[in-house]
Image 1 (tube, one colour):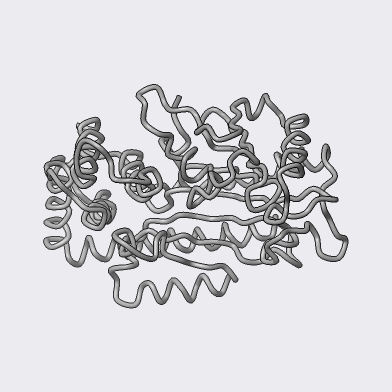
Image 2 (cartoon, rainbow, N blue to C red):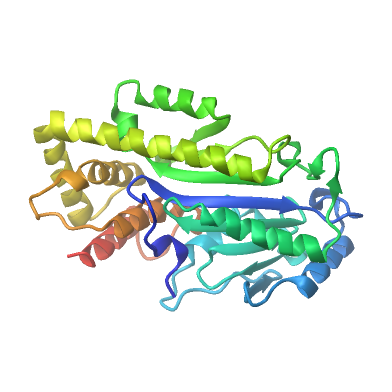
Length: 345
């Protein structure tokens, strides 16, 4: 089964993924941070009775990890994006549950930060992710007594989510903007104009200097989910145009330099025996910047593989809670990159 992050997506040269998160709570219960084990089990039991098993046939409850893929590797999304940014869902796992579909693009987590957390994910720029999450949330609202206030909207433990309880996140790879003089400051100003936020995918460690950022919605009160989506669509289209314009300037004004860095980047990724995350992500950035302008036919890599490589590296720290056995992580990473690239040759 092809996972959601392995599929083709619209504007995938810039947008790695679209994620929509909808949070809801059930009336009459404490928020998860204050719930005892009996309350947690009651919530889990209530949700189990009403969850749509046709849409979410896979179930994970208790302390066992989700299923693996056929070749034995951990599911990227089920261990990272589906379960939570820092795998915090694994804490007190016997009090929680997760339901998810075959390609891990849609899930419902029970008793994580809120009673119900709906996540919809899609490759590239895909507004349909909002409809997926919103439809699943509406289905649960019809079957459960959801905490709602006419004045404040949907009630959540995190005051920043009260109101719509909805957050939209676009993960973008913007190497040309980052490398342009003043490009990142210009982008931050534009994002602020839409009342959205921009943050590095990772702010510390070996992944911190990457050219991958997360563009996220902020407003949840006094604005509808549809309005948040509308603003997000305008903003992400602005970002796509800005990044492509910066790439064109690099490719046409500094052709010799950028084409050389493009070839060097591919050579390092294809043949390096050891590579750290910062080196890999920087090399992938140069491939993004010049891929559409390279006419040498010497470098072959699809956008799907380029995005898969990027996300594999960005999320790998979530999959290794301890030092991997059988070799250094830099060697494991280099071998994985080589194997993925071979598939495009």
